[in-house]
Amino acid sequence: MTRAVRVEWLKFRRSPVVIVATVLMVVLLPAIGLGMFSVASDDVSGPLASKVQGLLIGEGWTAYLGVISQVSAAAVFVGAGVVAAWVFGREHADRTFPSLFALSVSRRSIASAKFVVLASWVTGLAVTVTLAAALAGVVSGVGDSGLGEAKGSLSRLLFVVVATGLLALTAGYVASIGRGYLPAIGVVVVILAIAQISVLFGAGAWFPYAVPGLLAIAGSEAAPSITPIQIAVVPIVVIAVVWLTVDWWRRAEVV
Amino acid sequence: MVTLISARGLVRSFGKERAVDGVDLNVGEGEVHALVGLNGAGKTTLMRLLLGMLDADAGVASVAGEHVARAGTSTWSDVGYLVETPFFYPELTTRENVWTAGILHGVEEEALESSVQRTIDLLELGHWADRRAGGLSLGNRQRLGLGAALIHDPTVLLLDEPANSLDPAGVVLVRDLLRARAARGAAILVSSHHLDQLARVADVITVMHRGRVIGGLDPLETDLEQRFFDLVREAEEQVPLELR
Image (cartoon, rainbow over all chains, first blue to last red; front, side, top):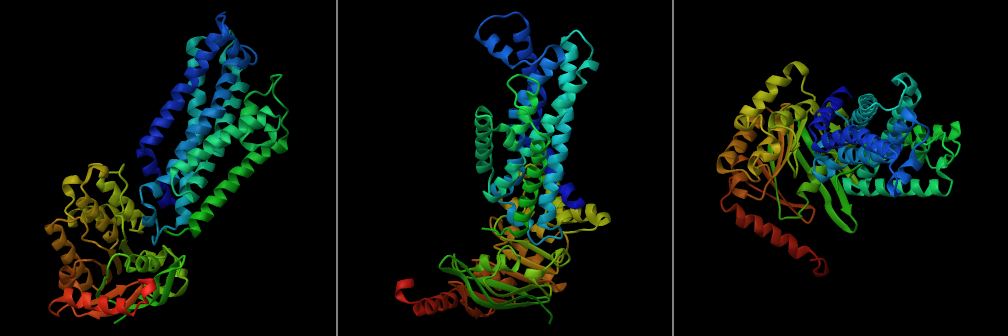
């Protein structure tokens, strides 16, 4: 599979979609967090301030990183979903799919390599977003205490981005069976809507795609408790998506 | 002569339409075998079946002595092809595209860089080697696709309309490449609409119509075009009126 990974990594790092999505998430997530934290903390009155204050849980670093985690649970799902949709769907949209048959590298290896590259990118993205959020917080003087107090919140942000990014790989499966990235982007939006609705009706903890978002608000009065079983369903969904996608690629025909 | 490409009673339908309908065909070592037919005759579907891009409803397809349904990556490393769209990633440079094809076709690591350069020189793509492939003309994309099919020096070649979009110099280049590969023992199955081009390169010409093999043409005979249309007309007259 090493050969397939080398090829997929080259295509991935040359992709304008990947570059734009990565830069947007790394820059905008801390910026949004900082902006919301400032609006809520500066004794500003008005409907926006009161709305944002409702999103903050705790104070200082906990509030600042918590709001970034909440935004990440939705934004990373869309960003990583678009990237995953592109990685798999572009082979159909650009009509390169037939060129992936009759090779000395199997299609199963090619699909697996796409997931290896995507999962590595999600991990790198999570680390970068977390470090960027910490740096922006230090520079802006978030909280009275040092960064040492923020360890728990930083770990939670890291986990939320990783879990959300891996769940967004579902778009890769939809892009494969839908033979293009547009159906996958549509499904990303629908899943996001269902996650919101399931949380609204109190069933979010049983909908795996809502779990990272619920973890982001854990500790607040509004947050339902999440059991270890409900958290364990998240990696099971990710593994199932990978298995289904690789199997589809193994069996697929050119149409 | 060893048979390297073979179809035995190959059938593939799409709904009620039989795109390939009981095709038998052999291509031997060192042979250039041309497929001709009108649009929709089944040439591309036949090539897809031979490359494992489609599963056959009935019959057996074999390449390099292996049934396509069972062929593994070692069998495919002897096969090169250009079917419909050229191998082409627009965000990569021409050189990176050829490198990618070399990796996927199993070119040995130590020979990879020299194979990439040799292929770029062979297809006369040096001027565009380090430019993004998205900016290439259609003709140069086709040359790139041919390079991707040839980089690993395959013994089995399947080329669907290889001269598409090429300028006259490109057409001559393809012709010379095919003859040179065949002289070195490659089995080549090539489709084209251009009978005059095929007559200059093919050892055998098979005519397809409505998914079936309806006859052959002698590349040396005069007025190939007239003979081709005679065969198609005769075949069409056998088709029930309600199916025409």
